[in-house]
Image 1 (tube, rainbow over the protein chains, first blue to last red):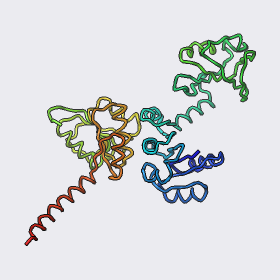
Image 2 (image 1 turned 60 degrees about the vertical axis):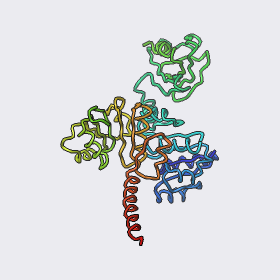
Image 3 (image 1 turned 30 degrees about the vertical axis):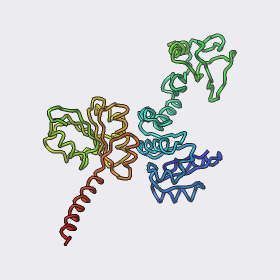
Length: 219
Length: 149
């Protein structure tokens, strides 16, 4: 895959290195000449000095033959315009913009960016998962938002603790995809027993979501 | 724009251009909200200015919501950063459905991008440059005419 990345600093350096190691071709655009020199010394890909939201710089960096563009500058507005130009002018099939403001994930989607990812929201989610403020955490929406992926922690008071999956008979439009137990993931089958302290990764459709949660937590 | 009808106008950026526009529109009796990332930018506004000032980054969605963009008749993006103007103008037009949206083109080279995104861009440099050139050309034409024997 030809990947075009706009941005700099350690994030872009390590991302590029990762993509290289997976056999992809990486081109980086950065507007700071010194940062370009630094990157060029350490990466084997092409480094283009220029403004990534400028058509000439994108052209020079081979946007025409890029399979994906990643806009990873520190500014949301720059990342928006970079991705819009890549898809509008160079018909790049996949564009991804990093955003700081979590609200901009939705905003960018409405402005036809293939996808926008808020690092802020991602980190907040990860922190919540590891510190477990809540019994029920919405991990992320999938399937164009029509599928909920949720993490549920089972307390001792849970009505399903000590029962097998077969016994609890969840509705058809739901699935316990995985169980985290003592830091190890399990892919459960019918005879698998649920225990207090388990963290369940749950896939539900909106219509069954509420009833499944109630069934698992008793609340 | 008829002065009798009072419009709700949001101006993004309170620099030399933004503050000029805000003062003029406010003078005509329109209801103004002006956004700038630096509170000190509002110091240049005329003492007559009666509108609303918001200190904030206009690329933050919550700031635009606070400015009530959904009720705006007109949004003008005047910052010195083309990508900020492009982003704010597109959000105003496509998400808040503001009936009229205009943006300052800071770098004349970027004018085509505004057109591509369907944003009405106005470039002060091109306008000033053309004004200089046309008055120069007029003079040189006169000189040539006088020079004709």
